[in-house]
Length: 105
Image (cartoon, rainbow, N blue to C red; front, side, top):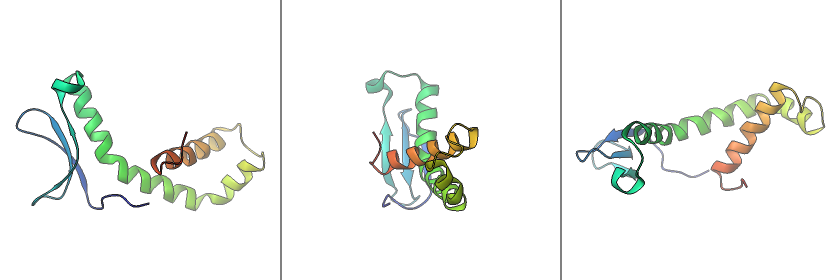
C-alpha cells in the first residue's frame, strides 16, 4: 500500500490546532485538525491527531501479525476457530487492513 513514508508525528500548532506531519525541515502535512470547525474539545482533538500519527505503525504491525499467523487465519476461513478470541482478533486485523487499503465496507 502506498502512503506517505516517514515518521508521522502529531504536533500542536501555534494556533492551538493539531497537525499530523512527516519530516522536520519543510514537513509534509498529512492532516490539520481545527477546533473552530470540528467543534470537538482539545483533549479529543489531540487524541485524534495522535491516533492518526500512529496509523502507519499500526498498519505495519497488523500486516506483520497476519504474515506471522497466516496459517491460523487459513484455519479461521475453513470454519475452525471462527468464534474464538484468536479467530475474532485475526478477522478484526484483516478487516482493519482492508479498511485502511480502501477495500473495507
